[in-house]
Length: 150
Length: 130
Image (cartoon, rainbow over all chains, first blue to last red; front, side, top):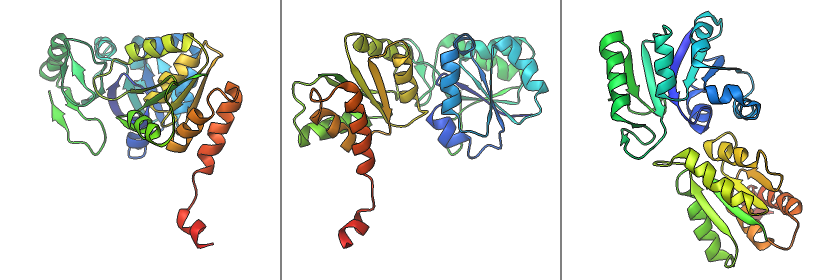
């Protein structure tokens, strides 16, 4: 069962460990990041950053969808960026809600919250998810944060 | 002397650096503070810190283990044996680091920063009533 799907380029960090995990009834964190799949060092780092007691799984987008659907754990999915989210959607991923937590700042991107920066193209893709797939996209950094829409 | 880098959330590192400079003499030392909050491109930040680290022994102090600041610091230390990362940054640690910079080899400096940082935490009211 999926308990939350979040876009966060910082992967496992303070907001996740101190903010989300204590209030989510999750038993597994699934990281979707091709970058981490390739680097053992980054995997070790994430394992250290995640409190013990949680299962940690790291997948590429194409493998993550099937994995999440079949996992018997309560899965908290953290996707590195919009690009990987879209790839998962193409593989049939269809959560009810997607939470935007942190996305990489780059010149030309518009700021939507303290940590969320999106290009016009990304906004278009996300809005399409809402209209075509009935997936609700919300901006929210912590469980206690005000939820805002695009 | 080693280079000292503070990486923190928000303005914590910058504020600690300003506070430390008002308490002890940090002039002439290579100490810099970086924030991981807000409009920061994390890849650019990582590259910038890696560049600093390649030019000699570096001590990186970060606020909390598992946070973004710490994750970036660890990535910078990955292929560089002359970079040491200590987490749990407090003012005493920074003061110890700058006061002993150049007086101790990097490994020993690290140990002293950790020891002094821990020593600085105690119940002050209890202590004064003794």
